[in-house]
Image 1 (cartoon, rainbow, N blue to C red):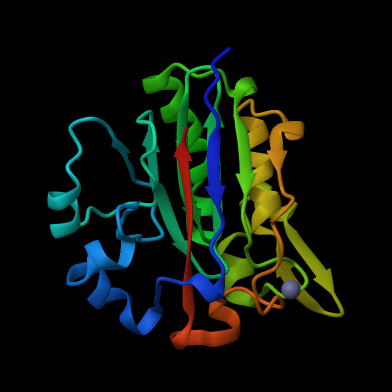
Image 2 (image 1 turned 180 degrees about the vertical axis):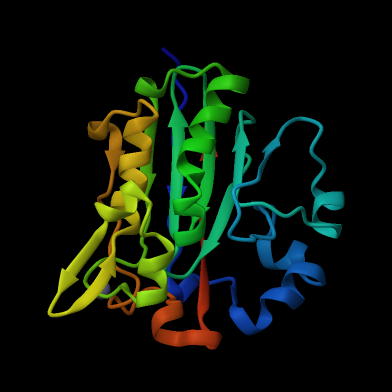
Length: 229
Ligand SMILES: [Zn+2]
């Protein structure tokens, strides 16, 4: 068993490096200052991702930021991160193969199974055993507030996992993004007892966090980061 650990820092509104109106500008013009050595992709709500290895070069990355929604690294002391506002930030740590990952899962990435895609890549490229994996969920929209409409429900009507994640309350429907990812992770072989949801609080009703639902186009984007130590 390795002696490596992880440092995780979940973003909050007070330390938000950027907000939605400034995001595109910061991403392409002020990237190095805004993200100060943290590898963050241009997120697209997709399921593509990348690996930060010894060949990765920060200045060229900062000049032309790759698109993607998850990052993996085995490099020590390299901060990798995701920006969120109601979407779910997830951190993965395998203490045996000494590899970490971070993923951004909004509802689109969630139902497109980004959590399983990350586990699969960790298995195929980094030889992890999913049972060894520790997964940490950060702050995200929760079922107290994350209401969804009829169009959303119709879109997911044939998704058997989604059916378990829709909560009906007083004639309204709420979507449980966290539960959806828990189900996917368990299906990939991750042990439920290794999914840590201690800080998986609601960003919509907790004013410490930037929230798309609460702030709309002016929303703050919190940066959650992890590094292997
Ligand atoms: Zn809430």
